[in-house]
Image (cartoon, rainbow over all chains, first blue to last red; front, side, top):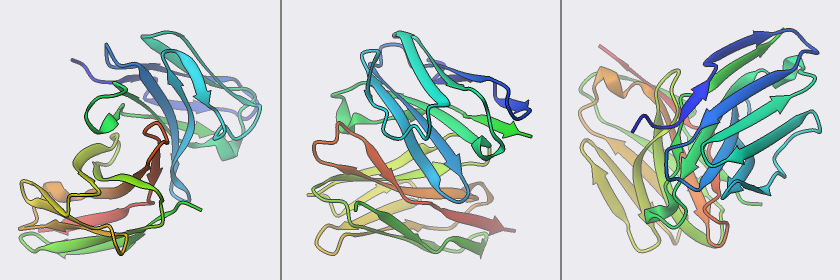
Length: 115
Length: 113
């Protein structure tokens, strides 16, 4: 298995632009998580899905952030409009809910820089 | 408030030496505790997972301990190697949280030759 796949790996954009981050979870997994990592705050959960349905989006910082999961093999995290303080590494993780320890497997991350 | 605190924030050791990283948590009710290793530019990878009833678990040169009474955990690295240079993140899961994880900010370990 290729693991969790994220694209792009790096994104540099200007303030005000729309940014879309993509994630392909591990095949067969039924939960998907979006995280943001910064030096100051570490890893923070933004939103997670069970069976493509958003369960908890309380970590989404503002209405500028939105996430979708149209099917079991694809999810997007969109920021519109982007701001410099959104600069961070965004991770997607997936798991098979009910598996041993509910283990989450992380993707390589997307490093976002907003100028 | 559920929190996970790690110390030290960063650590530099010489290759071949041992080291111990600390984690204190206030998460309740406790489900399990994990240690993740995160290499630069990569996502976190699980090293060990311990439940309430487990007080030690090893993964090669990595040994994690858990004291559920004092809500403390440690990760001991034996005979460190250059490839151990990474951030080590302590993560705690709360019962009934659907597996949602509470992350510490990590300890950045640098192993020097």
